[in-house]
Image (cartoon, rainbow, N blue to C red; front, side):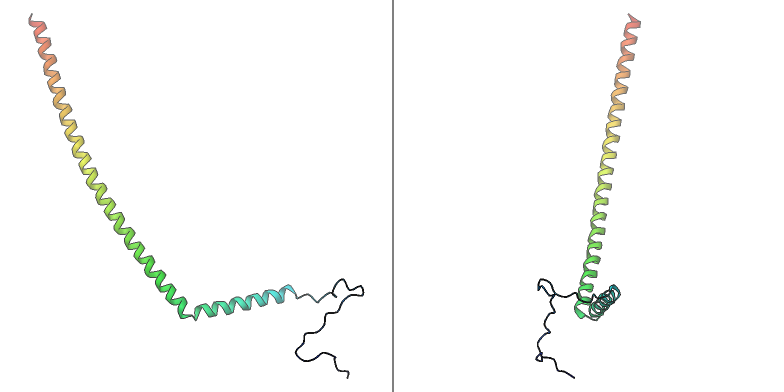
Length: 123
């Protein structure tokens, strides 16, 4: 058997076409092999993430932050509802007083009109 002229550790020389402008066509890797390689890389990444303590620490921090934000949101809504209820009660009271004042004013005007009508009838 003939030995190759390559030294160990050196990459093989590229085979070039006769005119030297292009390298010889390479054997293409099939899509299936490519997809399998990507799937194995993804699987390895998922395994690495799931066995990582740092991932679980980050997950715990995110869960605590989400719970805190939920609590803050609920407190904020409760405070806003309390303020809204107080404002509503105040507005109802103000409108009731206004209605009473208008009612009294209407009664006074009705008495004044009645008095004017009786004066006109009496004269």
